Length: 287
Image 1 (tube, rainbow, N blue to C red):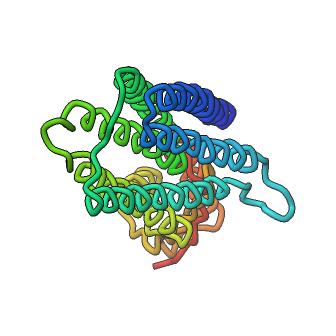
Image 2 (tube, rainbow, N blue to C red):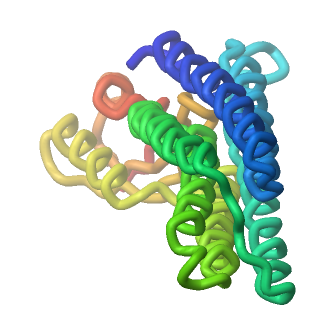
Image 3 (cartoon, rainbow, N blue to C red):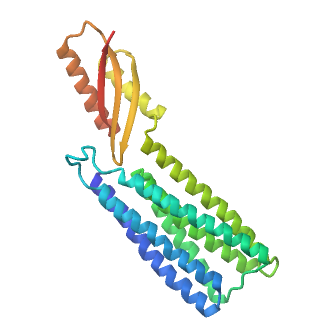
């Protein structure tokens, strides 16, 4: 997928999320007012808060799509990583808030009370938010963007919270504590997901060792280019959004001429760019 198509897909995912969240906010708020449900109205505002993460995604993807310049020769792709951290923090705070509210309900022995309209609103919310989450996850797999993954789980957190309220509607007459108990489970799930997203993003920002699969593919290309097995080592990968810089050392025969070495290295770099979509910098060592 080209960078232009990648950018358009990310923008579409962001705008889809904003439009969907505004629609669900209006639906839940209306149902909450009609049924007199404070919980449903609170969930409506939680849904609207999801639009904040989508706006963050749109803004930072706009910056990330800027081409390289004199000050930033590797481009601006790391804006996406910054977006992932921000969305992950928002997700963490949302999960923490769920936990506090759930504990408060259990302590106060409060049960959820919802009208018939709330049931319809929650079913629609679960279906729409899960659909948005699946689309964002699909875009994440295509674009390998942690920001889209974070936004997808933000959608899913709202779908789960709506599912909790839906369960409360069905089961509240059998167990007053079901809403608070399920709320705590959802809280733990969301906080864990947020932590995982932030942790993985920080790993990329700090610089993470290339995975074994990439190293193996590079070594195969090197050996095929040389014509026999040689030592490749000291692999370092630097990620800038779609742009990735790979540096490594390769040990070539000491009796090779400089021209032969240059031709071989140029071919290695060409194949690595074409097959792995990585910009390689190769240090030659003579044995």
